[in-house]
Length: 616
Ligand code: ADP
Ligand code: ZN
Image 1 (cartoon, rainbow, N blue to C red):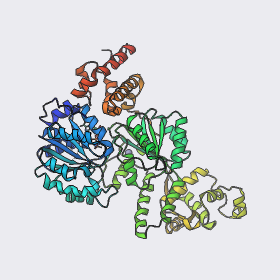
Image 2 (image 1 turned 45 degrees about the vertical axis):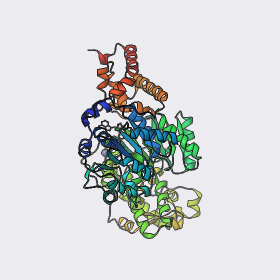
Image 3 (image 1 turned 60 degrees about the vertical axis):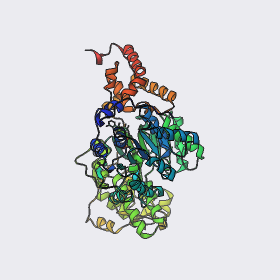
Image 4 (image 1 turned 180 degrees about the vertical axis):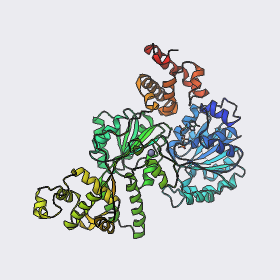
């Protein structure tokens, strides 16, 4: 836990950005936020995951005199955050319950000696009278309150300790405080300002979009085969696969292992030690797939998660956005991929109706589910409608979602819908989708015979569509409110007030043509990044990074991020000057790792010469 001195004159933010972090320029509103904090203003910062919040408080802490305090509830992450700072040559430490007495003493000593530039601290630890007394004797550069939405008593992540953070205003007058979060609606923003007693804060609200995440949703046909096709585009990469049940988590993880993927399960049924060890491995390894229930994810700050796959629908768009937000924090291309089908729609509707929540709550939940299902079926830019749900305008089409990349065909399904609805009606609104479709397609099975349904006028009138196509029609009509699933009658399909208008020919329906499962989803990128992240040099650089990370006991991304490695693979720097040009290579990392990586590149260049790409 030794602190290392900061080698560079920490005069201005841009110099720090270039020389310490090795980044060429600020992103989004980072520069303005940093200027406000350096000038001593309180700040409210809302930025999506991966937007680059850490620099917003780290750089002012380095530039201002004194130590920067970072309050965070995510104790598990502090160790790696501090390790990453030390790699940059920044004197940093953390104080939380995972340190033993001797380690704590050492940190406090460094603090009093003025040797630290950044101190991460858990709120409960900070609020101890002893800690506050100590800290108020020192020069404090800035106080950052991360995950600031935890003050909201109405939110999912409420932490009672956060309410007491308002006393920091009085204890540290004149010290700028910065509240940061990735998730906060209007009322929660107000709450953060009030409860943390921020003084006329400068507000920075960034757009919610995650441009590097590619969204795609496919109708579910054969879940495993679809997953394995999707994963072919992500061999040897880190990712998360979400399933609803523990059983399917275990089965999917086993299945992935037999298909050559490095996969581990994670759910509440595993022992604590097994869960911790699987999570730890996920953080440390750069090619591990974790298969998990939603129990996994809070506090996962791994930047190089290349995909998040949902084999089952999450419970709302909010949950979906949070879960998929764990992909691509490093800004490199990442996939959010989901499959869903008629079964999911029926199951979620039933779960909702059968829950013992009050009617008011059910109404809210129903609206959320409708929004999610409706979003799954959209035919125009998926990103735009996702952001619209959060009241964020996205102009035009994004070009990086499934509906933009291969626009779904639509068809006038009015006649098909009428056939389906009348068949539901004629069979007495007592049967599920399978039977209704059998009747429509003129099946001769016993259930049809026994019920005398082969004598109905709707028997066999739907042979023009395959069973799978009918399921797609049923699913979409449920989502659009033309069919209801009746929980009192074992999932029977039933008519709704809207369906009568459709039957009378007063309404038209347009449906999405489900893509045939055989056609490949646009998961493999054709962008330059994918080209860079392939091939022997990329693999050699990754091996080198893995080796160095193991030696230093840090996760690979702490050595260099994927983006930095890709840039090396593309530009093949072989001198210190060239290497410093690469984003993510600062002074310290050049000293520490420069030669090793340049050796790998030199060997590669020699081995592959003559290389037409590099001839002058
Ligand atoms: P957040 O906390 O908002 O989720 P981070 O602070 O972890 O995001 O930043 C996400 C990633 O982006 C990190 O890998 C970080 O090093 C990188 N990053 C942040 N700012 C810049 C920048 N100006 N230029 C290049 N990379 C950046
Ligand atoms: Zn789009």
